[in-house]
Length: 190
Image (cartoon, rainbow, N blue to C red):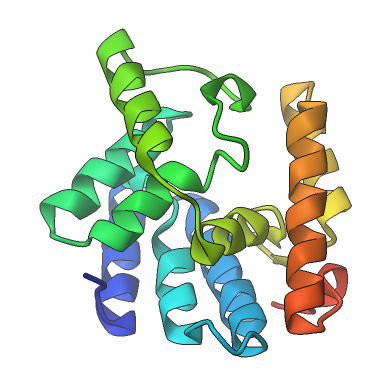
């Protein structure tokens, strides 16, 4: 089940009130990118893509965390009955289904990590998973940027970016360029 666009925005606003930060603006830019790309894909629903983009980082409502935001968002949205956005909370950080590719601190328990790994293994990625992975890799708080610029930003902040993850994001970008006919690096979303 999906919330409406209005409900998704309300959840984002409420989450930001609990934990203010640039993640809200990033989420809105990711949602706008997802909407634009999905609008150019005949088999995708732009409103669904927008909602998933808005909520992909909703776990950040719990505070300044790293990988914990993934499982926190999943649990929060599952509790509300929003299975599809809950799934995106898990999949958006793992273009490659390997928790070892996570960029950032592992700030969850072993049991939480086992739950995360189990969920990740159970999901068969679809175009919405891949689209939000892509849009997460395009969205800066001030607007969309090229995927290389965003990945370089992440690499500069964390000191590394796994090569296989970088290559996978480029592959996803090319897939959606072919599918949508858009120049993904120049979406011009603000």
